[in-house]
Amino acid sequence: MTRVVILGGGFGGLYTALRLSQFPWTDRPPEIVLVEKHDRFLFSPLLYELITDEVQSWEIAPPYLDILANTTIRFLQDKVTDIEAGEGKNQVTLQNNGTVSYDYLVIALGGQTPTNQVKGVDKYAIPFRTLSDAYRLKEKLRSLENSHKEYIRVVIVGGGCSGVELALKIAARLGKRGKIRIVERNDTLLRHLSPFNRKTASDALSKAKCWIDLETEVVEVKEGEVSLCYKNQIDTIPADIVVWTVGTKPAIPPSLANRLTLPTTLDGKIEINPYLQVFGMPHLWAIGDLAACQDEKGNRLPATAQVAIQQADYCAWNIWATIENRPLLPFKYQPLGEMLALGVDNATIQALGLPLSGSLAYLARRLIYLYRLPSIEHQMAVAFSWMTTPLTNLLKSLEVV
Image 1 (tube, rainbow, N blue to C red):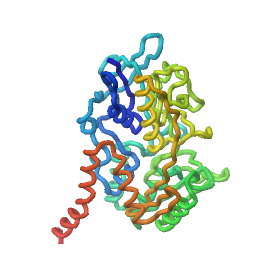
Image 2: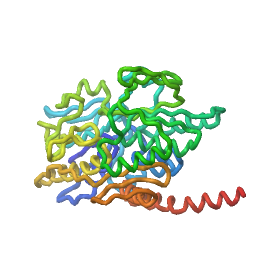
Image 3: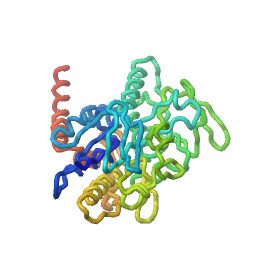
Image 4: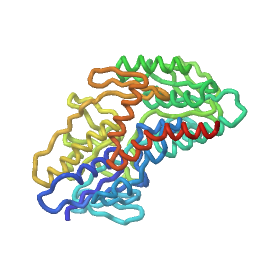
């Protein structure tokens, strides 16, 4: 039987597996094996809402076994320790499940936030990419909220979407007690977004009284403080929490990267052709945060969920087409718009040329993400939860009264 092995269960890997399982097959369908080290999928665009308790963890992090229950996809919770490709020996080695051979391989191991480029970041700062990161940040906030501190000082490094969304969520949670500062090395926040979204976000940050330090770099993080450099002058300021949202790098273990002889760019991403195949290896695909994917104009695409989901559709099609002897499709990215959460019950959207902000944008954003959740069953469960939670909270408040 033909076997397709997919490494990584993020947006790229999981959605490729789901799409591939839905195609019609002339003969016997291939065995699809999904390998992921975690037991839960993370819908990361809604991770910020854990900070303000707008969502529950099960809503944005369903178990893979639940997602894949009604599919033929085989799930292995394991870590990849080796990948062999070519010379008649196509197999991956897993930490607990030995070797698994493959006919076609998708590498979608995702990305991670680099924390070793500035002194003290790996020890004293908190990244914000995983469920455990969110739990760690929430616990730190809870501890400070229960302390006798008059103000809680939070420094968020990075003025992209992650930094801005996180700053406004924390500001909404802490209220007047919070002192939130965003540190950005460039001369503007959200520099890749539309003018409308930048302006709306800027207004929200101003209303929340968040400090903005532009053209500023972090030179060191210590316990309870952070040192900033602005125009060659270094100042050290107090910080109860430092959150690091800067950058992304391929989440390939160093031991594996040293043995994996795949073509890569200077920043370590795997080079792929227009069909999302690894150059020179037509039986290998690479998608998501670790792939150097470009649009039709040759511009590098960002490491976002929107890009990975679209790649998954093309990747699944091209694997199906390869097996079925059909023509492959070159990847064409379609920008579907920009969305940004701006605190509680507030968001901004620029899609199809139409700008939208406020509560209506917040609701639209939630509905769009609800549609993007990985299975119909989970979509229905989350929709029911979102509809009934306000009523449940109201009844609880009446009981207290």
